[in-house]
Image 1 (cartoon, rainbow, N blue to C red):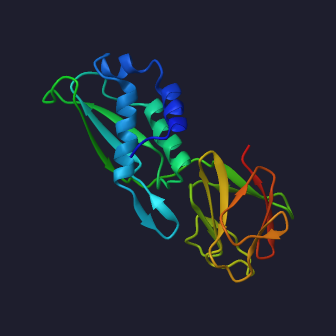
Image 2 (cartoon, rainbow, N blue to C red; image 1 turned 90 degrees about the vertical axis):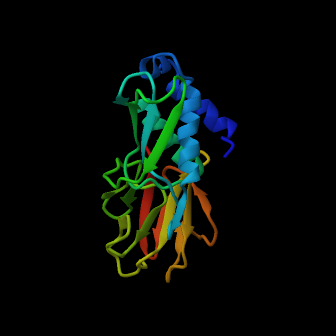
Length: 212
């Protein structure tokens, strides 16, 4: 996987100044961050809502500080937002010091650990201003209790639409619902770019997208 330059610049800003603390100055933290992103990309799987990647990464190094890194966690989150990946739990990168590793080498193991994610956006009811959190990237919206965003309205299909972030934008796609999905009153049939404050209608249920 070649990391897009825009994502690479974001990663550079996220990890600036943390290399010496994490790795004792013996490793290029940008290279480690890029290796983590490549590890995620190599382990992409696909389910009904799209690409899913691991959210937990063990990074084995010879020298450094055994810890969890907030900056490297955010690298994974940023890569997921940029690539439209779904994480089933919060990103968690753990640095593990292994004396059996040769100096300057890195090994990475990844897995999926389901868990609670913070909301990155909300659907605000146009009727009563009730706010429903959106926690997953590639969130399934529908009437089914197994949906990520449950809308208890009979005019909403069990699986209505998918909402996600990718390449710096928010997108909405109707997945063949019975009564359709609209953005600002216009029915959509393809992946449609949306923005904070847009009116999203699922069947007859309308909500404002709130990303701030």
